[in-house]
Structures are given as structure tokens and as C-alpha cells.
Image (cartoon, rainbow, N blue to C red; front, top):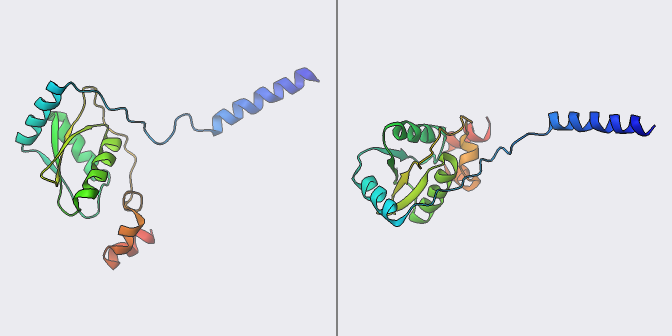
Length: 155
């Protein structure tokens, strides 16, 4: 009886391992530590660079992350221009971009430009498709134009 119970327990454990996800869906982001010299160099390079990604009123969605990756194929730094949000929300957008893309926020320049560095061991972000419902807080969905809110809430 004891051996049957042990075999049954092993079968249940293997079945449970198949059902449970192996990794969490949230990617843990551990920012690299930059020396002050590197930080200054990449910040200066980021301010001078011409490559940018605009973030519109929809906020962060998969297209923004993919455009960041396309820029980071050739360049180390990138400007993310956020003109439609107030400065306090720009900081939230910067931390969200760092978490989603795996990059490092160097500075918020002139209140509406986020300067980001791709990191020394940058890899392409996962291709999970994020809907506007996930990326926009509920209050912004309710405030947005009626046609857009209808498509977001009734998908």
C-alpha cells in the first residue's frame, strides 16, 4: 500500500508540473550597474543622437517596444519622445519602458524625452502582443475618445 501511494504521489507531481507554468509571465528586469563615466558617456551620446521613438496618446504598446528594438540593432542609445503626457506620468512611462524592453533609463531630458540605453547584454524583448487595455490604465480608457474606448472595452 505504501509503494502504491508513493507511485500515485509521483504521478500527481508530474501531472502538476505539466499544468503549472515553468516561469512567471512577468519578466524580471535587473538593470545593469553603470559606472558614472559610462552613464555620462551614454547620456551625452543619447542627447546628441537623432534616432527617436514617439509615444502617442495610446501609451506604450507592442509597436513602441518593437521600434525600440529596431533602433537598438544599430545604436546603443535611443530617445523616446512623450509629448502628450504630463511630466509626472513620463516618469511612470520610463519605468514601464525599462521593465518591458530590458533597457536602462539614463535621464528624462526637457521633461518629455526619455533617454534610454539598451544595456550591454541586450536581447530582443518577448513578442507578447500587448493590447491597449493592458497598457492603458482604466481611467485613461474612460477619458479617451468614445470610438476608441468602444473598441478597447468591447474587444
